[in-house]
Amino acid sequence: MVDNIDAATVAVGRQKVDVLVLDLSGFSSMGEMAGIGALIRSRNGAPTLVLCPYVSSAWIPELMACGPLQYRICPMLNDELQMAVEQTLAVSLNPAAAAQQALLDKEKELRDLLTIQRSLQRALSSVDDIATMSAQVCLALCSFPGVRHTALLHMKERGDLQLVAQESRNHLDLSRLLERRDRLLQSPLSDIFPPLLAVSGGELVLLDAPEKAGDPELALSLHDREVRMVLALPLRSEAGGPVQGSICLMFDRHIQFSREQFACFTSLAQFVSFGLGMSELKHQNDALAGQLMQISTVDALTGAVNRRRGEDILETEIRRARRYALPLALITFDIDNFRSVNDLYGYPIGDQALRIVAETVQTRLRGSDTLARMRGEEFMVVATHTCAVDALKLAEKLRETIAATALPGCEMVTISLAVAQVGLDEGAISVLDRLDAALHRAKRAGRNCVELAMQ
Image 1 (cartoon, rainbow, N blue to C red):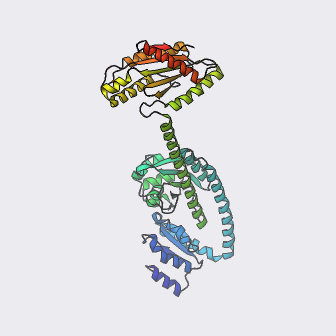
Image 2: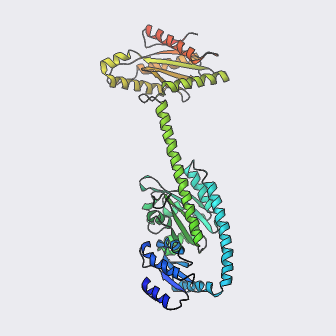
Image 3: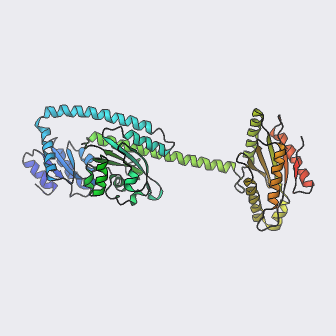
């Protein structure tokens, strides 16, 4: 029994040690592991047992790179420690049998890891939607032997860690266990529950017995759902990068992971991180595309579609009306004496009048109708499935509504309107010309009135 690495190195060099037991409970960072790694390498494969606190379990795969070892998560009872030492010693008693068993174990590991890798690759094809992809990831992870519950936690804006998906084979609901689905880092279990520790610490966490977390209620809840071991891995797309969340696997048995299994789980977590990153990037691109579409097709002042978009919609609706023999009507209108409004009250009041008129008209239209700002104070309404008679009624309602609308900062504003039903073989240019002529007649008739365009 020695108290430090230097003394252990001297002791191992002086005498034959059947099994080396290394207790990492007194170490606080991986930087102190260099000496332990050198000691493991010096064993040249001789039996080595590492005892590691579960909050520092990320050290285990790091030390496995230095040489073969057995590990146990502490704290441990004395009889558990004695059994672990005996099992470690038993490996060296029959090296031929141990080598044969190791080969069989490796073959099974490879099959299991390939299965889960293929399942995860299929799951990551659904990057269009984070929720769908996350659900499929959790389902894929459940294909690993012994896994009874999987969960994916995702870090949203402002440090809000959310449970976005889970797959349960034991009726465990993680949101009920944590009593929340979001802001999980504010949970009372944030300092002991592996997936939360994996996010806050940014490292792998392995808890091989729920009671070792030190919370009897949590341990009882997990045992009731047949959970005997919990593995959590942080999600980050690159080493040292920001933690995007964590994945959590709960097992119904104790499994002594190999170095290859740890490496595979770490790689799978990175794949999931890439999937999350691609999904978020696609969501951002879609949002930007939507904004660009909004900017390129919508008039910023009034919220109506702009002239180019209005003309495109008109052409589309004319083709549809012609194909299905449906009625299609157009209404054009402009604000009476709008230049006088600008001259008398100023351009800010004029802009406000344009905005209020457009918003008021929009509230009177159906969802299938389109309001377009054509130029200055002139607008067009494309009214689908509408004949001339109904379009005249709608135009009259619009005229009355605008005349009765209060416009702050100026006197009453009115509009003049023209109505036309698109002919069977008529194109956009022809019907717009007819509407323009009708709108001029409305103005000559004294404004604040409706004129039907003649065929």
